Image (cartoon, rainbow, N blue to C red):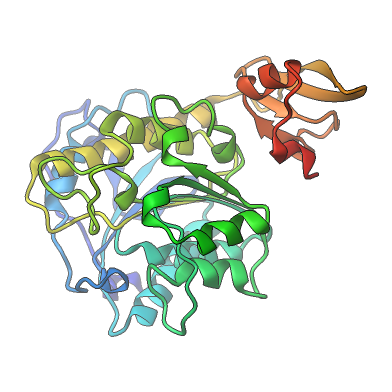
Length: 356
């Protein structure tokens, strides 16, 4: 497929040698990070006309490139299809081209239902996907059409998809119907409330560590002065917290696709554009740090006795991250935190570990 018919190339910006814009290219490269901006908000009752992401790009391009080694590509702006389904199809074709080159596509903008395209595009190349979503809403409504209320049920309920783990982070009780929350818990997927994510990433870092796909619903981020998202909220992750979580996303050992959806592209507030730009920057920093980690890992083993039963924890001596389990293959152990280990020493074992 000729992407020139579906993607508007970004304009050029004058940047300094030390700025990240100086290293950005416009063609998909192997093992790169590929940015693509989407304007189709029909899944969130918005419009589909091509929007101008220039303000976001200006803020992003002028940030420091530090010692980043991974190539960064800005493909441009995706032209919306005649229907929402057309937009999803076009996006999946672009995603597939990225996966063939082992590039990590980062989709910015568009409504939250485009998470379905990211999952579907990745599933074509890999089965048993670990999917982590940051969203204040858990919506698993049924329906033929795809929108921000139905996409999750299409992912979790499809017989054609194989999902290994699903983690839902940042939900707010007062915004959700209890039946949806109960259903996710009944099938033993992990749900973490907003209150448990605030101030520190330590507790929820394990949910990002093995993620293949991570999507962020900007509705989970608090708005300040002007609406940051399509469905602005007074409560949510603050500016520093979301940037810290973007870095955690980048640090995932298996990361293959990222989406940042429901951003309010209609906003004229420079601070909103600045925050989105810095979210991208911290994501890229995390990816670069992860790529610099040694491939061979060494682990310390710790045993905890609870009610006459022995449980094993492992600590990565390089990164100081923790796992639960004594399997020689670390892939068969469950990512956890130091706090999980400390709680186990007190006699309390997380339910995440007892269901295996």
